[in-house]
Image (cartoon, rainbow, N blue to C red; front, top):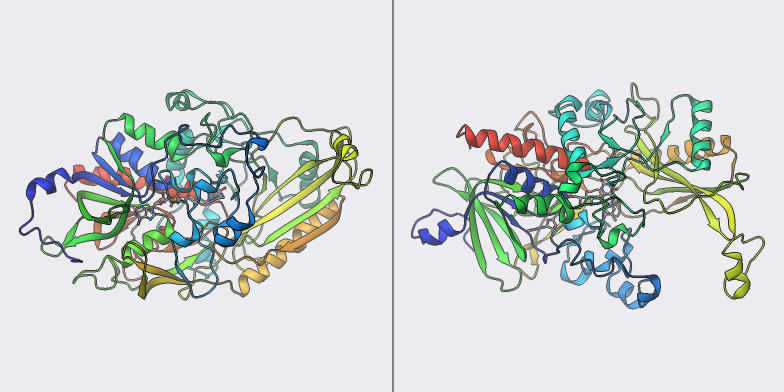
Length: 577
Ligand SMILES: Cc1cc2nc3c(=O)[nH]c(=O)nc-3n(C[C@H](O)[C@H](O)[C@H](O)COP(=O)(O)OP(=O)(O)OC[C@H]3O[C@@H](n4cnc5c(N)ncnc54)[C@H](O)[C@@H]3O)c2cc1C
């Protein structure tokens, strides 16, 4: 397949038919945002998506099913597990959601070290199944790697993204409480889900015992009280069904399918082409610039080229690395824009190995009515102003409490009439906490293209070579020690901790490989997410991350995407691209 296009002997009519102002690769969380912003700016935008189309509501086949209407009551079968050992480990993967995840056999890759690469290939990507946690980064995270010498400096700070966070939050709808915590800045919140009585107790206990450890309401992308902008999107109030990952017919949580893509479609500027596996970016040697992208039609396997003035890469972190590495030309023999040689390196993730649980006595007169699709958050309290531990980076803790159905002490049976009767009574209160820890980007943690293995579309397989390090072990240990102490002081008993020892990747927060930075010699992207040496190519998914911070990352991808799309539009107006 030719890697360079010279525009000689080409059918100009066909080129015109395949030419747009902008091309977006991928239609997930970040691609949906690129499409929305570019279309809002009046640019004719083509979204290329490798998976099938998924229309809001119509294509949520399990959304309204009762447990007894699912053949296995929601459980996955032994066969499914056997045939999909990797993807079936993903959070939220079950009988009612599995159609929004890939099948292992269709999408192989090479694990040089164990790495669980969790993917959802369809219009909407992982926005359909994501967990929806949406905390803002603080300057502690943007400046941490430089201040404590464990990473590369970001070319931006919190002040650069704060207005864009607001822009995104207002549109997607994020519930939460304004808590005034420096390590986790407040946003444009809708009313929060309530803390229950035990969570309120934990919050007070942490404050009393530590002064600076804050358990706060979830900051989650749910419409607890829709504003006009949400009603304009055709979305309604979250019904707290907690069946989100099936796709929400109310549009109660944010997904590309319910919000950004239909919004972009309404402008009349959007074209979505599903079943389009982007193979590579086209670099025109004569023009000295990128002119389009090359796809393989997923069904016919035909190669088609599309052209545009600007390209947004939003295929999710590792796929964006793959596309760039596969885009070779005389000018860029090692991958598009890879003058620095760092493309594919400094891949990082979140440490999700730590889980804790316990039981708390009392609160028998407290009960929770209805469901809550969110978790409370303990904001990071480690290594903020100074490094106060034997590791670098910080961690967010998600935590909560729930009341068990039935009391196992009074009814040890787990089947039969007595058990059914017992299940109608409220049992003891359980407390849980889990870790989302920062990891250090390292050169040796990388992805590259396989030299000899290809997928069914003739694209080289990705090789993942990403592992934990000593810092991850120390951070995990500290999480266990601190959380146990905090829970003990709050009179939680029977505290247990559990190291899942899961492979990196299962956190589903893979990042990096194409980092932002001020210096083109040591980074791929500038402060506007433009490839340093190909200014009309923008990378705004997790590939752009210079470090991982400890907050959930997706809202930052959306924020950087909205910011970059507006910059792209402004530059286009000035004829700079
Ligand atoms: C169960 C679960 C829970 C999660 N919880 C949270 C959370 O609480 N908070 C949070 O911040 N994040 C969470 N995440 C992570 C979040 O889903 C991702 O960070 C986010 O979806 C990344 O957005 P994206 O646009 O980069 O990728 P995606 O949303 O994955 O979209 C990428 C799209 O690109 C398409 N694509 C890939 N390769 C190509 C190609 N070559 N050509 C054309 N199209 C291509 C894919 O099919 C896909 O549609 C969770 C994820 C899961 C699965």
